[in-house]
Image (cartoon, rainbow, N blue to C red):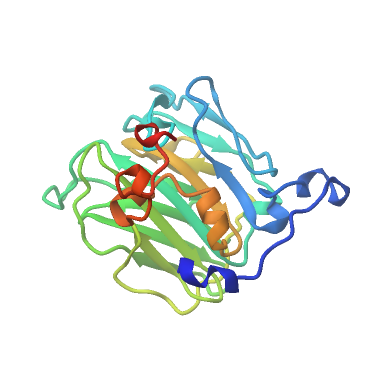
Length: 277
């Protein structure tokens, strides 16, 4: 869709006079609800790169807190099964009528659908257990599908879409894009459409629940966690223009493998040190 990028309405960069929370390009006021790049590489804080400043804490849920690893770009976090997660406080920017949620992840084991006992591995969630308050969860499960589920308050129903069946290879990074709102609900894996799309899903909110990376909490004493890595999580309440995507591409993008247009980089468009940055 880059070719039509000049037709996308451009959002003005707001100034400091619009309020501290509205300053700069990565502001919730112009669409950035939160962006956890996970590039700190150490410490117990996962900073929010947007100006919303909803930074999270790495939490030990009884076994260990997530640990820092080399990510797909920069660093990421490794989650041990039934161990820890990242807890992020609720904020007004996390209530969105529509938008897109981006997640870059890797699995800690080969998921092929051959193990019927394998449980659900949550990547990102913001939902009270068995409440329909517009909370959501993005997860992996067998048979080898990713899922995006919203517990809609409008009709007390779960709105769910899933990726096509696939094999998640241990150590490989994948990108998910979950779209929702009046324009419909869809889940894409590395840009590929999922099994089905819904014409309307409603928004996400659930202000009573914190946002968590790498876990889903049934209650204060019961939870499930991801086993594997997370590199980047980004929430946006609008579509990004082409120039914004080029300036701030998702960590899940493997641009060099998809497009060839820069001869100085061996025919690839890339941003790693192997081609000079």
